[in-house]
Image (cartoon, rainbow, N blue to C red; front, top):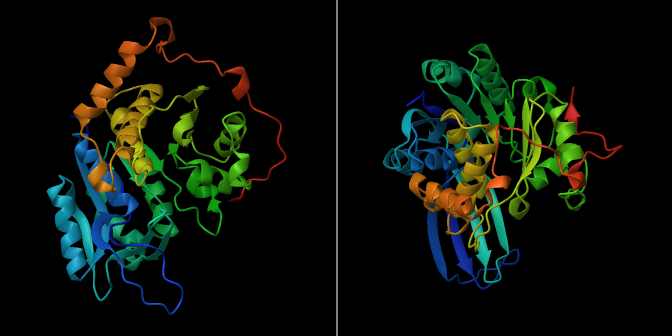
Length: 345
């Protein structure tokens, strides 16, 4: 097996209270159910990689509390290497306080805790793991200067670097960071925010335009995750194509995007073409959406393989992938735009 995947990012414990409605300020309300889940976008992606049967190491921070011990053990139990998970003294672990109403509405308060203590010097301490990685994944639930340092390390050692720009920060992402990104993987909301448009303005018909704008800011490849519409590729080699989504009965889309990124990374390090790896990621994300929870929803590799084989068996031979050559459908051709990118020079 090639070098392991290294995920650098957040590790959280989600505290979820369910009730008939969300309390108003100052109100005490009796709830129906309380549950805890291991979360954080970084940890989600690491667990998803492990579930797919690929070697993965996590770099992150937990607090010196009971939650920290539980979160580290949860990663270990899932098959994730935790040598790079350190403890921040005197700081709580990352926590999300979630109240869910009967109709599905929710109220969320996130306390970054130890995640905000992951600094560039921590990456230097983990340099042996990073420099031997087959792929590095990160997100934006850790400090931006740490993401910047991580990208520089990836470039220094010629390691593919995947950035999930979530959540989109209040300040623009610098071009310095984006120039080090091999694969930028925003979803619809994140793409709209980065391109300075309203979320509803991004559609399958014009996604090519905005993917091109993002590509021109520095990353080598842009993959826009568009939910049930699929994923649009704007690649360094000229590939422009919408990869259709897999149709499933969705139960909970929590962490489906994290599952997609994990599947995409696993496909790439296993030698798949970008198109094939995106299909693998799409199948991983689709299966995740059929189950409740975040890390508990991540599928095993054999499940993803079965989904792909079933889809291929129904596909006419003439429409199957051939030699990585693609054309952009007419309805996806780039359009003229005057929208300014929300990106910093």
